[in-house]
Length: 267
Picture 1 (spheres, rainbow, N blue to C red):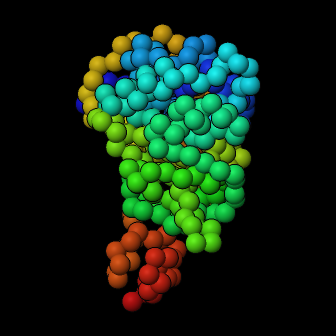
Picture 2 (picture 1 turned 90 degrees about the vertical axis):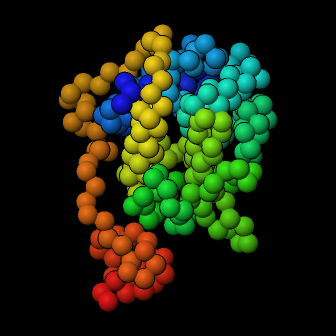
């Protein structure tokens, strides 16, 4: 098994992630046994990324020109993933440059926002045991190379809430809601469980690569034992799973009928 799995959270383009609403996410990542580093001073580059297994980009929010997304950053990230890295990416609320220069390059475009619940899921480690998630999300269009894991229906169209993509030796994860990472929405339905699944999966991917990373040059996030005890999202051993005898889908332990095929669980 490889050593520690290093994750870089980009705050150079979005200083909003420094606010308290994202503290639970940061503390939880550390609590789950990953090493979290925060970049707040430099544009993303190949040299910066070579120390990490995964990169998190929560949609840019800074409005000053010097923080605009650059084509060179897109190239560095694409190479990072092709070489075996994992990328988690979300939309931005108003950064057109980020949308055109980066998101469209990896096959993502988005329109306005909506707030419907997601209850339609595809089987994947990230969606294991998930039955309902909710947060305001962007109506996104993605190319077929993306596998939709969670989606909602609006009229005749289906929009992805969560999607993954193989890219070279690495993986990309698209989360169409910035709010899913925030403290308020981590408390709703299966949102926290979904994030726990996601980072557990990313940890396993990083350990499986077995590549020795260089020592990161940015500051590592350290969580005290007292703060760890207060984290709401715990990495607990899963309970005994319950499956539908008719369609084989995993169902909630309290279910009387299968949420997938509607069959009685008492037969």
